[in-house]
Length: 278
Length: 352
Image (tube, rainbow over all chains, first blue to last red; front, side, top):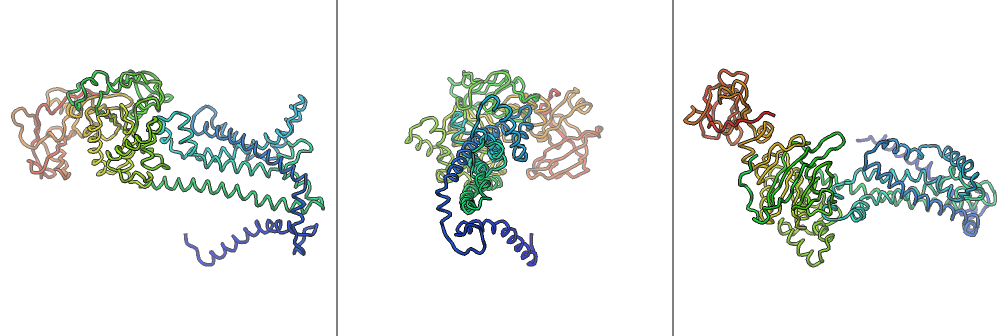
């Protein structure tokens, strides 16, 4: 498609505007984290790293961070195992209720977080608590796993659909048993999607607020909840800026990696297409 | 069902047990019966083709032998040993896949070596056998390339080397030449035949290309709708088709019935008459024939194809392939002429 220079420039300007709308506020957060003043202001009068030091020494932040990492780790692990298994079942086998299961697996990502949160909260309060079962952190982990599974499932299922099953048959044909075939041929085939799904699941769990609010036991704070609770406190607000700045930087890593990985997949697919055409 | 002497001289001791024996083999996918109650023996060292249109069950039979599918009924014996329930990696057969299924991330040499590694062949021996296998397919120079850097014909040969390097009892080939263009395919046919003769392994070859099956095979099984129509040498199948389907599927033929058959052969049976056995001229001793008008005349390269409407049978037509220089090779539309053929060329075929 060809564009006139007027429409080209209009599109350029629009793109710049949208990018600015997204990234200028983020830049302000990072800048303000170096602001010596207690309240955010613009322009910054005096730069300082004192809030970074304060954040580093803040016990609440440390605990919240550790909680978040634990929750995201376990939720991702559950998602990897269950999500991959469901992806295999749904893409490789035909069985009664297959489409229903598919819908039920994907639904949590479409469901408003508040609904998931209320549902879990009710279940924990009305079923487990009367039985004096205290789920603690596990309640948050289960809540997060519901939508983390979808990340892994979607990635792995898409990849499995494109994989050449002939390669697995070829490996078996040449004498590889079921385990060898899986680890030498099948898993390398969807490894990139598996890792990408894990990174997305981890990132999603790490910044989740709504479901966490409803499922966290009193006193348990993940990092986003800690930020939410401390944003309005004048003394903590600068520390929140620091945490936000750190999270921006940290969350870029998994997104970048997962893009690289799925990009590698696409290259492979492109090569496969060329081979077919040749 | 005849099976004349067409075997490529297999070892006399090997003759006793068939390389493959399929006994009452059946496979259904849900309501679809892909293979019906099949009985078939494939001899040691034979080039055997499973020929049929798509959906006739030939590929399913191959996948059953390889172990990728489990049969719904019946048994599979490899060299006399029951492998009906064995996994693919427990059977001493190897497959050349239709799309080659070469591992894209491994070099040619590594692809060929893969199975040897799995079988625990020591490194030095592996190297020698990979080299010999690449030598056999005349591609020693591509050892370090990736499959994506090869042409279609080269990939096909690497797939062949990868399967043969394991020295299987039986090599299964699933339409291995289907993806190649016509010239390359014909060249590969010759190569396949040579390699099969060199290694002396039983080849089971699946194809829908009747010409390919006829040129390559010692024997052919013709499939239709999950059943074997006929097993025999290419000559058997071509000259003495056992069913109407076989007569129609292998080459082109005149299938004549009703009043015309009665007039030409004296019976109302269905008769198959190959167009290349029909010549232009008056019937001589031992020949049958009929006069007619040329309805269509087409130049084919090797000769001329005539479509003749026989006198008194305007609703019928007879096809004749006339080689260059032979009488009638320049016959034009509307011309009157006589057709003649040896009496035994009109072969009675049971109706389907």
